[in-house]
Length: 339
Image (cartoon, rainbow, N blue to C red; front, side, top):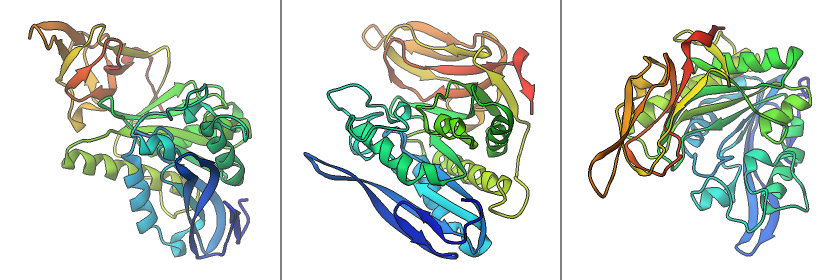
């Protein structure tokens, strides 16, 4: 893969210096043909093949804007290797603006369906096609996620807790150079795209950045961070020249250090930590991050306070939230490791 001039991927033969696009056929559904879009930029010089996955969850749409900008701005003449972009990995869920498909069977979360099954659920069929036609032909990937219709905003990179040796080190580097400030050693089994690549000896990062239906300035800022992060990863892989651009310290933490403040009852959450600057900042134990207001009595029903000192890596916008919904997550300061 890494030494090819001509790139064979997604059923295409892409010559050096060329761009190409295709639709990967999956199956025929009651709604018509189901296919997944793939866009490729092949550099003029040989190098590594890097894939960017978006919309594995259908309501996490913001990353496709980063993919769009990367597609428009990346010139083959600048590249040693290739960029493969999948802006909508899960067309069924995307068309329904839902996290996963509404199939009447199990295995409908694409994020837990790799490498897939050609005779399984529609979601498993999608995973099988993506694996056979794309994932098995790349050297590294970034699986981009964002806050979805639940109203959350994110900023972290996830490292597979089961990755070992050189695969772990290379994956950690992809996470670090994206520049979220927080790298979470998380549960990414082989049924995830990143975990699948790791299980086959290749580096991968899963990144959570931004959210859905944000203000214009907030969208612009998260978009800039996402594009910079992807370009940093391409620089780290040697696909683009130059050193990664990091604006601050990067910290590693595990699931043990992950602490959350979630509503235990339904209501309207008034968020006090819903600005871009809130993500990545240090919060203090007991700090009031939000409050649940009972929409019927109009009384304050539950405070949502920081459970520890640490870095806030996901938050939420103000709005309705059900009992048990995700609210705020903090990487506990006592366990942070600078990387």
